[in-house]
Length: 289
Image 1: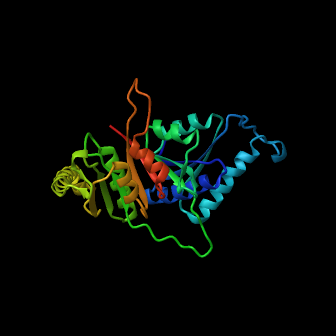
Image 2: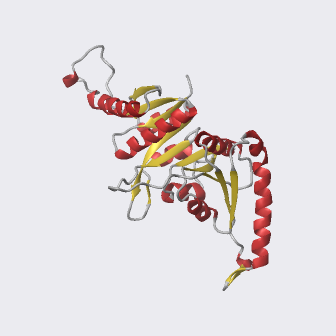
Image 3: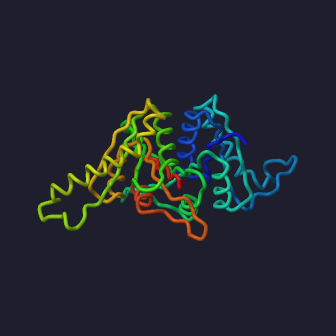
């Protein structure tokens, strides 16, 4: 199967926003876009049947309408439709294994500025074999024009391998012609916390050590993507807080997830959780070793 970007459609504004983001991404990466709608009660496709008795009419209409809207904006993009008679979670996990990335919509709760993650999205994000991108529907107030995004942000832990995470982040920045901000948050130990702030000597040492580690982690990627401008950011705060703050106004936030190991239940770490629940930009969760 040729490389594709797959987006899950369920008829919601969030899934349509995800479809538009996925179309832009597929075009940047010169990939095919697959529109996936899954429903266990889809009927076997008859040879010829009038629309008034076609049990799949509304499912087809949902996908056809999205395709028409996307093709109007991306006339040269190859778009394929996929109706799957299966549970949505199973269908999305299977689609993720066959795709360069899976894109899903996420509902924003304006009152707290966070995500509402449904019963389907979280298990898919935690178990998918390939990157999953969560996209919020934009708040389009009359006369409001959001500021253009200025960077791609990647969150780095600096222990263990991050090759898959960095490859995705650098590729995403290169495809957009944007700089990459590499963020590492490091909590200050209790003994360095003073009533008036952080012990200056300890904070300097922590920052120096982290910047050296970050430089080593990024060195080979500078060589592989010489046109991507890279800026590092060491923040003496919890990693989750540092990443969410750094992602404000970003085009994309890229966070990692340890690939599922046999015998260990799939889960998301605190940084991925914080990014998904509080990040306002699209969030890519990338499984890596």
